[in-house]
Length: 317
Ligand code: NAP
Image 1 (tube, rainbow, N blue to C red):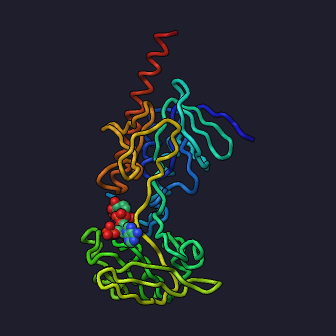
Image 2 (tube, protein in one colour):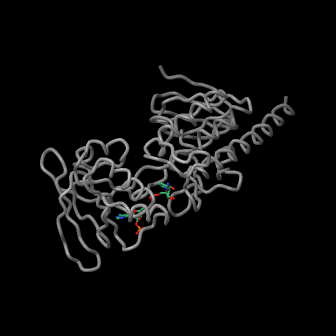
Image 3 (cartoon, rainbow, N blue to C red):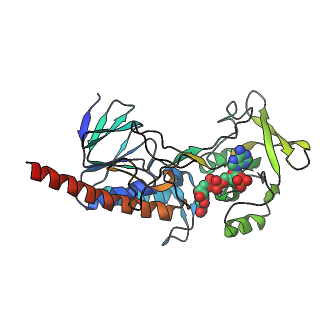
């Protein structure tokens, strides 16, 4: 049954930024809940190995996510599985409405909604989603043991997840629309040194083809020569970046051209009492390290904001 619940802070999204904000808020003795659609961890829960989070030379994304969640829960963070539909202001209250019908009222809200994968937008992508088209190597890689797997994109995610997929695939073919990768040099070098990874440069996917069961091949086009070709594959993993989930506020919120939420240095958005952290926020770098930094700042700034609200309420009383 739908319910209305009161908290000091509601965090929307349980990625590293949100969980870290939850840890700090809970440690400040605030009543705080983190609402997450899936499992806590956000993108990292779907990441193979993480090796750029200080203190952990190598840890699986899902294990790190679990550690974040356990740590924050230990200090009192509540984590609820909820799909948030809307965030809005009601006087001094900041309100979250969920698909379940539940309403969460709070003094402050921290948006840590991350993003969702960018789609290729070619014929066959939707039709074969779950039948050889996947956006999550760690979830689906093992289904394609000893098969040829194509990865599309040239960023950190494409190259790292491509390397992860070599654990299962006979070959991983990374198809990139340019002749230079965007990924960090260390990640690139590791891929160049991996015998199971091949690169197809200056090439885009025109369609994903298959039979009634699964993906069988990709239609490719070289953007420099115009030459077309067919590549037989067992699966295709597009890693084209992601779109921020920044459209849940009823009130207009300031964003950059890419739809990322703009904040001040305290992570406060253009809506008073609403903060943003992690991948949904406009910033140069999208790493776990800066998401947790954002989460920390958002939590501390929200605490100051709530103290001011409480002082004002006390003066009025
Ligand atoms: P990204 O850095 O935006 O890279 C997306 C890649 O997809 C680019 O190479 C881009 O090509 C290509 N692309 C985009 N649209 C395309 C299209 N329609 N057709 C063909 N190719 C297309 O995205 P990401 O790799 O998901 O990374 C997102 C953020 O997370 C980054 O800030 C990244 O540093 C971070 N991240 C970090 C790690 C790590 O540090 N271990 C791991 C994963 C992600 P162009 O290069 O030509 O634009």
